[in-house]
Length: 228
Image (tube, rainbow, N blue to C red):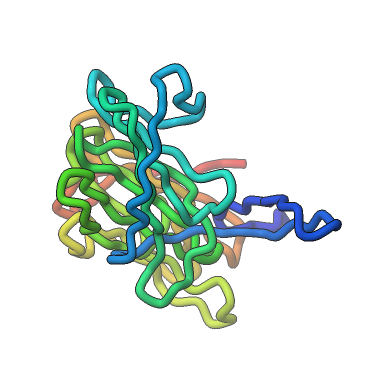
């Protein structure tokens, strides 16, 4: 019997404390936090970190700070200036930012991890300097430049023995699909036009998998059992 593990990301961050080296494990999340760090730093274009996520043909880039995984650095390629924002959810559960993607020229999508069954999504507007569109779930997917195509799964808490049904939601928090008993969402994929969502499901009771394709209105188009 294959042991199934919930999709989750763990970061090991090493820091020097006094004379000893220690490490800690982080998982991720994000928050509408009004305490933004307005520190600005002059930065030459050739100093932009290689792992920075940049707006194609745009002004901005972003990356996770090396010293604090809950801080995102945002820079302007034209002015050479950077400022930083601190990411956390309302309950302060964020351990580390895990994924950054520019949704538009000024809107940065941020995905953070809270625990193996819960991630936090939000959008930061670099012009307005505000957070918006906060969502809690896993498997966040959207088409580039079209945040309204966002879909995600709301999973059963990993620490509870009694598991409930999981659901697929859209950008407007409408439930598109509810899993059957003992099923967990194991992956989501959007079609190129954003109209169809392929959902991979795993049955924890009999260790079997199946996939379904649903529309944005929640109707199931087709279903397929996945053979080992």
